[in-house]
Image 1 (cartoon, one colour):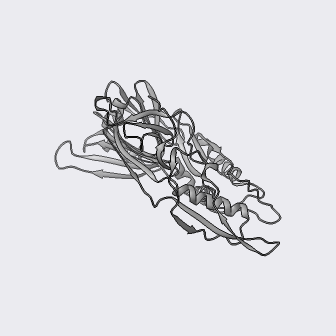
Image 2: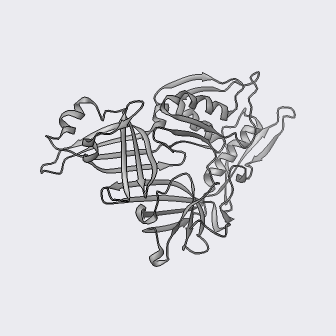
Amino acid sequence: MTRDLQLMLLIGDVVPRPASAVLIDALHTARITSSSGATSGFQLTFAVSARSELTRVMLPEGVLDPKKRVIVVAVVAGRSHVLMDGLITRQEMHPGRVPGSSFLTVTGEDLSLLMDLEHVERSYPGLPPHLRAMAVCAAYAQYGITPRTVAPALSDVPNPAVEIPVQSATDLAYLRAMAADVGHVFHIEPGPAPGASTAYWGPQQRDGEPQPALTTGSGAADNVEELGFAFDGLSAARHTTRHMDPASRTASAVSAPDTGLLHRSLAARPAAPVREHPLTGQTGRSLTQSLLSSLGRAVRSADAVTGHGTLDVLRYGRVLSARHLVGVRGAGPAYDGLYYVREVTHHITRERYQQDFSLVRDGLVTNTQVVTP
């Protein structure tokens, strides 16, 4: 690693320990993907040989077996960033015919994998969705996971005399199904300290302090290697359903509430919905449940503007984090401004630290006057 970049690796069972010098010396590349509302993953590649201690001793002893916990921490300019806290799921050996061409690759997923290993039958009498999510996540405290849940935009407390929510799925599938039904996301955010994570169940976090701006089209001041944008005019859609009032036995059309209930707009000209989709599967559901479901569909289709690019971390000066805001400047009045970082992929070698990133926003033209330098 370079003077401005250091990589820390911890491996073990429930409580991992710093990796041995043999593993650190053998580490060739690391690839880590973090995404909003989805499972994050990692792939570590080690240089090996038939006579190396990693091949002869450590692999037979199970040091890199599936379900071993792995924590990857990058230290950039003296600041630590926990990039991954997950479990190994797969191991691949690629013997080479010439010296220096043999590699061992281990692949894994973040700690949400723990929540996807067992089918569960469980009931939650009288608990609204965010408290159910809190109860599910609390069972994983031994892995340093702290739940953080946000109540849905509209109140939906089930009456135990009428309805008892029942889980018949893995914990992860249940958390994501509940989140999708109210316009929320679920993911596990590693850090801020190694071994600690936050299980977040709530709307995309489009508030808070933005990360330093991505600069393009400014010559020597550029801190991205490439950055492009697209505006999909067919992305935004309106979702409607018909709700039957039990008392009057009359049906009326129900449209999704404004997406501003979940998070603020990042554009002065949000994309207008040009399509209308029927919201199915609402028979027997309350008006609040139908409204939340239509709101969730509207939120998922609202981000009509996307950006994709690549940056060198050492030139940018810090690690760009997914699931947070970042500013863009130099792209012109239509595309400058704040964006939500939907996904980041880290590519780390001994010579370079590069990130591919994906940005989203709900329309054109910024609604903020300045971005963080």
